[in-house]
Length: 300
Ligand code: PSU
Ligand code: MN
Image (cartoon, rainbow, N blue to C red):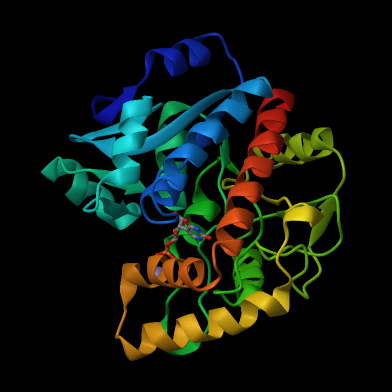
């Protein structure tokens, strides 16, 4: 499997010297935000990781290789290029064997981070159980990957395009500890609120690091999901988003959007219909997560 890995010089050096490293995904660049803010955000997030004492490793698939640590030029390509494949686990063999550009989701990024020995991964929002999943079975492979792979994931909670309650239930079924940093309520990405109490609350990064180390020392495989609430000044209230989310889901249905296209469609619809308000929140929260992720990687 090492022959499919291409680790940048900087990340290789960091691995050798046991420096803290933070993995970052590329689907958020190619499918999660519009150009050019996606590129600017990806580069700013890398800088925040550095400023907080860790090495960033943005992950994507290029020319048949799982690349760990991208150049600025490569990040620019993923931000600009229209036909980048969204790669979850099931897409990896196809995109790698065909040598096409692949932006990795949370699931694929986690797996590649683990292949490179990276333990901490920062993203915005994870995939989960979609509303109406009792009929569609639309449950993100992010959740099953979280149950298998030993990489801690920092996110801003779960977007309410998903069924947050069912997602928390499924995380429990899969044995994934869910920790909210600094508050009792599990956050819903744009908002600090979700209406659901977090299974665990921890207020210190060192406590989160202890929990992660304990899980893996026990031989319990899989992730620890850390939800870091968006800062108050950046949040969009839950009920402001709800109307757009309902519209987005209706539109997806009406246009027959299915499978892997559902999440990108909903994200784009919401970004377009909230006059950039949701985009600003999205950018703010991922930067906030990068700080916490870098500190956690250092602590670990
Ligand atoms: N949720 C967001 N922003 C994102 C994604 C989800 O708020 O960019 C992306 C992530 O890459 C995530 C993927 O892993 O969508 C999940 O896609 P799906 O629901 O098709 O598994
Ligand atoms: Mn899906």
